[in-house]
Image (cartoon, rainbow, N blue to C red; front, side):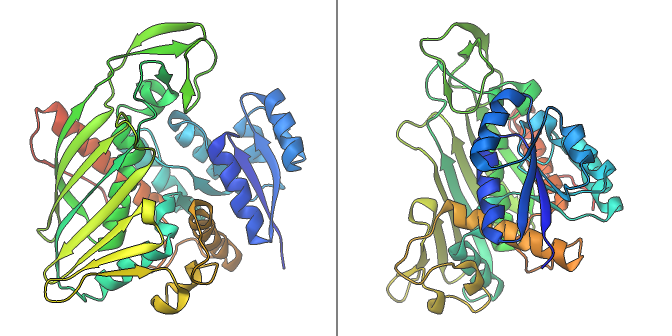
Length: 387
């Protein structure tokens, strides 16, 4: 079996998940990492047994041993890293968002298309087997047409004024913080599971914590600045948002996202109400699928390979009763990405769980439409995307 060389740009929390996932595939070698803090990266690289450490993503992208670049940098660096990889003919796996806005996202999607490389955005919740079971059932039309899609994503890691991250800086994270960060996951999953595009949005954004204490050290995600030298900065991006949705088939929807909701660490749920039945997936009960009925008892389908649709079983890694988790979902995504690379194909099949740069671009368009809706005073705004 031919082995594949992977290079990682960015060596934070997300980067370690990428390393773990590709090593589980069995035929991928992590040959290099690139970081803006090379001294710290060298110590970490030794722990992970990685031979090469670069001080720039350009050097890593030019390394002939690297065939696939994984991009886990802050949002504002996504496009530059991707374009460097494309210039060197590398396949690319990038964390979301694809770019800092839809204009930039369109440019990198078109460039990846023209290069004929494999390109993927890590919307990792797609990799959950119960999510795929819900998608299968909706595609089969078991409960009739979709009428209402709703849910939310709540966290509390930005609750206090001393909580700071590059994500709240528009120059690094983009103009949207909470919707761009976690609302993007929900929108991608809603479209992926239902097979329907979000046609238009009506958004209301709020900044609850209007000033924050920025630490003197480099601001990282999930950094609590209390007790460190800080400066007070004004915050313009939202930490709370409510959005009404209209889907292309006429279905309605609603979404609430918040990163200042005390007690909620990573609460993500998506419910789809159809003409004669409902389906709910809740990340806190991620090995269950709630099935709602009117004329018979509601059901809870618990993950068991033999109870799932035949096409979904490959996403389960353990027998029923043996819990799987976040890292397994992520590994499912990367397994399909690397299967494409091994087969010499640049585009996944329509049944694939892989989000391509086209999906990433579309997601950027949705977030931009929500921003435009809010900035216009809360008016219905169409999601405009090039095909």
